[in-house]
Length: 596
Image (cartoon, rainbow, N blue to C red; front, side):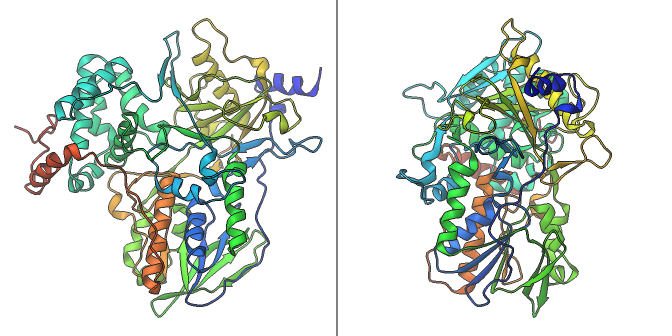
């Protein structure tokens, strides 16, 4: 028996012999430190999408930029090579924190991608996006799966949009696609109508304080209503549960997705769902970092910022430390924290909070886990030309078969026998599994992989056709950010920010009361409002505009695109603004307990 077959069989038995090394590989240039001091020098603390975006905008406007990243440039967006998997000169298999996708309603991030040169591409790395043309909603227990094509079939000349036509369309969609009974479909449609016609003041002042579960009244209806509409609508998108998520945040992204499906609000030349035509590093991040380095950005990978010095009401220096414990003092004219929220909290010293007491709200913000797990296969398996949602999975599993979208064959990686990558994401780590009584947090990496594989087989193979078979499996790779799996010390080094109810007011803006300190990241106040690469990019643009204003720069400001707003509902939002100011419920909210 060959080593590959033994490894595969050991995995299927749940044996630790199938364990895959998850050691992180540091990347980046040099371990130097220091940033040129002066009115146009900027120290960016964090090298993920937010930090790279800020570096891009600043270097093109003549600033001197140094980026400090504690781990690897690219942050959670980067590809992660499976250590030791490359053979005979081939690169390591491309693992990842989780598959990247680029909805059509993204505008800021695509603008940046168009400005990243890529050989032979007129529109830079943006041309490396390719369309996913369907989503598969897969069920267990012999229930028929549902494939939804993109673009969704729509009338050639749709009638004018009114509350009545909106309700009718959504009810029909929920009854047809989600198979909800008429009364549940009608109520779900009513709650979406209430949100899309709510004024901004009500969204932030009322709906932000209400959980999505309470807003959608999950306790009133069936488990299918919760699974497909309430919880199912959000947990695969933003690593949240309906009982924990702010209605304002979830409503914003749900509305954007709905308009996108209708062909409204998408950027020019886009589609509902897009993915890269290769690994994230090759198709986007490596060209981006190379471009920024060529323009003069200095990168200091392996150095983490953990403190700010305050003097005279300003930041005078940042303290950075490497994994060997060496500490350096960084001086610059401007400081931009582009770190995740759990890292940015470490900067909130008494001196910082004394200079800007409003930043204390950052400590109220929370995170949750959304983790990538790749299954490398020895044959191509294009399950559907897009993403698969495993609707009955306790761990909120989604996947995508990547080779169908990639230009470079996967047999050019690893040992040359891999033909596809079934890249999955696990979004619920606190619920017992379908076939194990343990939560994902309680499982070893081998148990996590075995449970996920079994759940996907139960969804895909339950109608008589063997779509996913055991002998397809080559190997698997769990995001190395998960440490101590299967022990009481399990941890996630890269959790995602979640939008808990009532925390909009606690989230900072890009500009602080400290005149030379700015924040960027998907956790600050942005128009898109949820944990996305688009939000990180938007926040960085806001921060750069703050630096341009504070420095008196004459350079043009960054464009900051907002989510598309349907003008058909402007009059209803204006009327609701008056109702909200009077303390009255929304006119269409029949479930509001204040209604007589």
